[in-house]
Image (cartoon, rainbow, N blue to C red; front, side, top):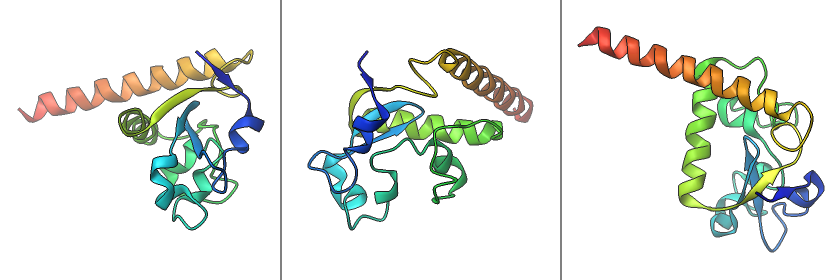
Length: 133
């Protein structure tokens, strides 16, 4: 898989010819959605960065628009994963963002923790659904 530097991702912000964003370290070309991610778009703040946390919290300031998902509730991780899967359907996958999720010493631990907590949440949801039947 191609590793994208944070600087390269940032160069593909809302004013760029090709607009990229990342969610949970997966980088997508969202140029087709220029009305959302371009200079006048209501989601332009996602362009050129990994704003994973904001996909779950709705906090669109610099504090919320970051890749670090530590401390989020399991249902928030589930929301991030749903968005990530949706982007894989709707937009072209470009590569992985080097940093928190990929290509650094601690990256695998972050991915493993996210996946483990998400699996635990999904298993709990399945148990609750089974009890309703």
